Amino acid sequence: MIADLRQDAPDSRLAEVRVGVVTFPGTLDERDAARAVRLAGGTPVPLWYQDSDLRDVDAVVVPGGFSYGDYLRAGAIAAKAPMMAEVARAATAEGTSGSAPLPVLGICNGFQVLTETHLLPGSMIKNDHLKFLCRDQRLAVESTATPWTADFEAGEEIVVPLKNQDGQYVADARTLEALEAEGRVVFRYVGENPNGSRNGIAGVANARGNVVGLMPHPEHAVEPGFGASSSGRGDVAMRSGTDGLRIFSSLLHQLVSA
Image (cartoon, rainbow, N blue to C red; front, side, top):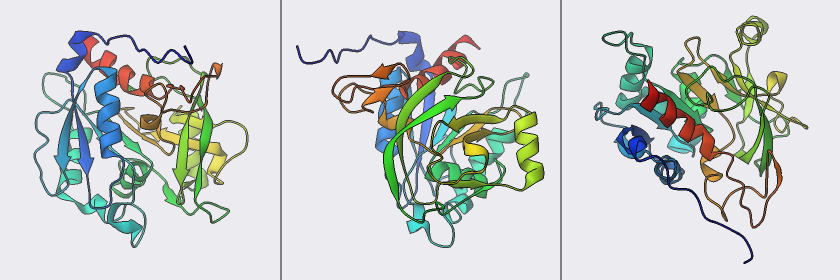
């Protein structure tokens, strides 16, 4: 046997969790995000940018790509879509009977969209070297106080693919100080800073912790044979790194146990 590519079957209860995946014109990774949800055990639900019906989902992923070709600014036009208005409403709502606001994960272009909707602070600009970058990237999980990272240990490292040209996270000094002081930096680059992001920030959360933006792509590290060539635990065979899957399974476990 060259490599063992088997995965354990997920808990059948997780299939009850419905995770919406938004598609805009120019989105590239919605199928990958939906597959990540499915492999983690959940039920992916397609959401169209022109609609305003969340279809009774329990969480939302805003996936990567180049929505509207990154015209004006990356994510700026997509942020005005009817679906994003509904996502923003649900993510900031108090909910009924004390229920939590909608968990939202923005990946790469989705992170850019979340900053443009002001669900997350800061902004994304061109990489400091002005080149598109594609490589496996080591990250430190800085915060476990979100539904997307609750299954991790603080300081734990993971490896997932990174691919962007507008991946430099920027914010003013006061915002950066607040993010650090409040524990809202969720992911940080380990080793070389790949795009010049302030404080090496790869992902942040809102104040309530339900909305997370992440520049690298966990949905590309969910299946043995197709993931990264290393992991937070060391080298793996045949690109079998699946560190990204735990971000999606973490969400499902949190919602099932809530």
